[in-house]
Length: 225
Image (tube, rainbow, N blue to C red):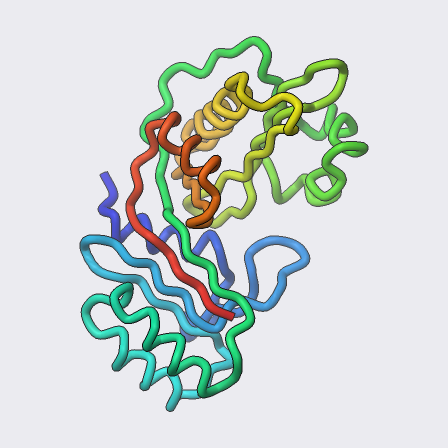
């Protein structure tokens, strides 16, 4: 059983690629955008912090002084210090979750997408189709001959996968998102990997899904660019 702090370590390694000094370099999915300048993952056991390789040592030292014991309490001061370097263009805050052991997900309506049938994604989820080798495992629910709900791996590391789930607005409220996401998590776990899920603080629908899935929230992550 991994601790919340260990889960946060897995989470940041899923989200971003790192250099040899453990600085974040790029987002861990095509097209590999530049990583944020700072990542702070807060848990009740402590925080996981990562700095961009673009930050100079003096700025990192100032940020470390602000973070101290409980980084989440010093968000405003972190913003002030980082703004000395340059203006903050993007601030992300959101809860991070892990799936419990997924026991039964035998829903006949859920279809696993493989290289053999991935063409069904092309008209509706072209980016998932184009980057399919990075997105497995992938599951869909088909209605009216179209994939109306999908869950796949948004990002992956050696030990964990992070979920990406979407249901077409005309087909929401039917439990499709729950079914495809459980199927995805079960497949990830079957491979001996950790299934993770995260969302933004203002995405209430996604947080509601996390509650319905009975996910465990292990922390909150913050990244600033």
